[in-house]
Length: 285
Image (tube, rainbow, N blue to C red; front, side, top):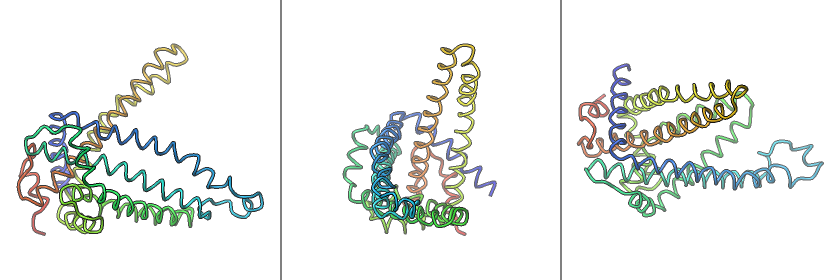
């Protein structure tokens, strides 16, 4: 297990070099984050209203739980669908550009967006599946304060693992959502060590990068009482730093996903990655 994590850590390091060569790939997680915030803002009021504002006083006393309101569930499902669609759309664009980078090309942001536009049916289908699963997990969690949360959490972790390679499959093979889940599960069976290890390696990189940002935020909070200007400046730099780290983390994760998938499908190491690090992902069990 330690060897797998070490190999995954090396894959994370190699993905960092790919990102440094094509820094504009960070634009996609940035656009994704902005659009997700807009989606959240646009659904905040409808979710609030569906959760109780449309009920009478007597109804509210009998049904305090908004999950029992069909309208609330419908709005929540729509929110999940739109949110997942946005995330998958920009992740697809990022992976499409990363694949071009593997072949030595210098893809543009427009090419990434065009690649996602060409896969709108697959993206919409996967967003629909993800929204359905998300709503089911939310309902399960709501059934019991503790037991439901545990069951929902375990099922959510399993679903996240099985679907780890879905987006690369959607982008490169243009497969439908069901076929993409099957392909993702098959790849995961061969490469789970590298997938988990690389994710852990990226997490470790990002954790180290977050430490000075957190220190700036804490320092800014302490200095607020002495110098408001300096305190606000430190807080701002710290928050901006955390946002940048988050963008880098998202980009690295997508690059690693694409690299492991491509090696598994072609047998050749993508540009910027060592075959020795990727080979172990598909060694015979």
